[in-house]
Length: 136
Image: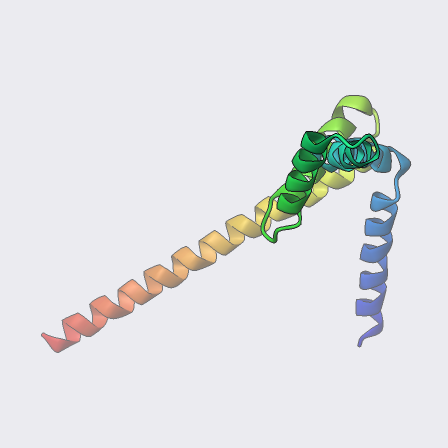
């Protein structure tokens, strides 16, 4: 691997780790996790301890649903955490700046991919039209 590639990877990893280990983001993620999942773990423990069957059943059912592949729980948790970060810490420009940068990159990549698909389709249509004209 080239030296500059290694350096670029190190910079990206450092940025991601610093972003994830940000105390403000961790606090918001913890609150978001309690909103989406934590209540069910607490409810399961309390239901089992006090032998409240409906509480145990409800919590266990929700937790079983959350462990099924394909549930959007993780995406929802991250979205709530980002929302809480914006609400609770609006002056945290460093973290919010990174989020804005990643959002802009994502949008740019999606638009670029759409353009490539559109151009590819147009080229294929043009080739099909040329073949039909040559057959006449």
